[in-house]
View 1 (cartoon, rainbow, N blue to C red):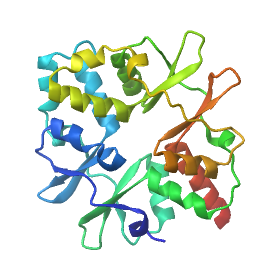
View 2: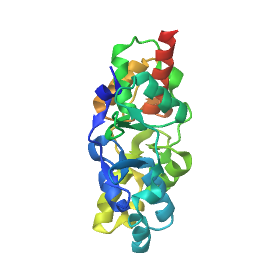
View 3: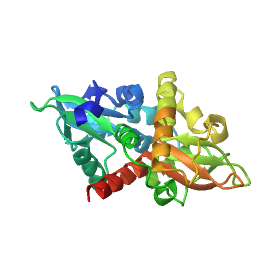
View 4: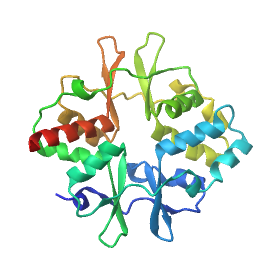
Length: 274
């Protein structure tokens, strides 16, 4: 198997002079969470959901009135993109691309053909497909994060955005007054909703909503003794980027993300090569 067999073809793209409001509309196309930025048809940068969350926090931390929104949506893609991103090539072995993703902390790699033209993108989720062909050797417990950042149900959306921006999180479990997890808010959810609110001209109302009104109540979980292969399969089937580990009281005891599973995959593939 080569990267060309795993990659998503025809990924979302925009020219570098496109405005950010176009990025908001494109970033969640096909669940990729990224837009590739082109200069005259050639790869020049990449923008992720996390980049947009950081921008929302910068412009709408205290208010999100019309002037704030104008400053948000009329910046260009070139102003907020990560320039000259690391790439993979169609004929590259998946382990080589996986090594780049783990070593450089990248969640996605644009894919080029032998002529240097963009043909696709490979993300952490595509890499998880490799778990289906390897033995179940490693547990979720070994790779999950045990310190889980949560937000109280009455906190506002802008509070969640600030937590995500400052901590580099993309998922935030929501708890009640007892600490029990009752929902989850993700960066993708926020960006998707902000796109709608910007078009309606009323993002301030959304940013001021309590999390219990906007959160996803379907909290997907995994057991710490489950294999990372099982966790990867569930993420792929459910099309989510994380699974929570809950204790007997329904409180967050851990979280495992696509990133954690990519690291587990990297460890296991290197173990089998020894």
